Image (cartoon, rainbow, N blue to C red; front, side, top):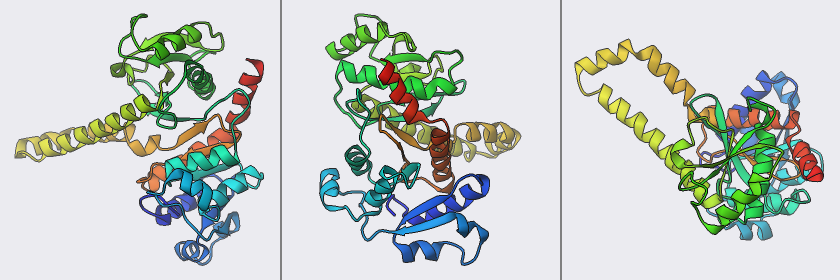
Length: 324
């Protein structure tokens, strides 16, 4: 019910999703009257959609701790309660990130050996994609927590890694061994001893999109800045291309000639295709959609949720920490 655009986008994406994936049923949690008004009056698809009413909603500007204490009849809380009680396999929200994280930690909890969940997202790179975590859940991290993030990220990246072991790097201001804070130096030493993935050392911010590694680990402060900066650069480049195309008759002609190339580039780098961040470390699948996600982006977040349920990502993470 929350998010910048409200339930309209989520419900439209939900209808497309269940057409594409007949193996999934959906539960829509929120104001029952409003949800019903956005669904078709009669359709076979309605047999696969359940509406669960919630009296309240977590606003985008609500304080997370206040929401945790006072919004226990909200759509976010009710959805997570359904996940906790095994009435759902995954929970997806475009709402308040801090509130979703606080409620998830309280209701779903992390596995033994994991101190804090981390927000992890797939990023487009030169060849395929790379997972970046943490993206804002933990502004300050200990070396042990960064090590835990690396283990969790490696599990998620197992399906994209070119070999049996994911390539993992630690985000730093330089690639030399002596660079970085005391926390990064201690984390570097820990990761060097890890055998469950291929630790390749430090990586600088200009290497995030190189595709040289499968997982990039950082604290939430650095990760959130890196993510927001990359989103800003993408918007800037898009606007500059449009501006240049409109400058003269010649540039318009060149744009027509290059239209297929521009379309290919736009499709490959479409941020909607990378929407859906995972709260790794929780005992069940919780996915966060961008608050301003359009229908296409929200649909992709639903696809991410389905994939992680099928791949049993939480169970695989638990197994790694049991064995560790």
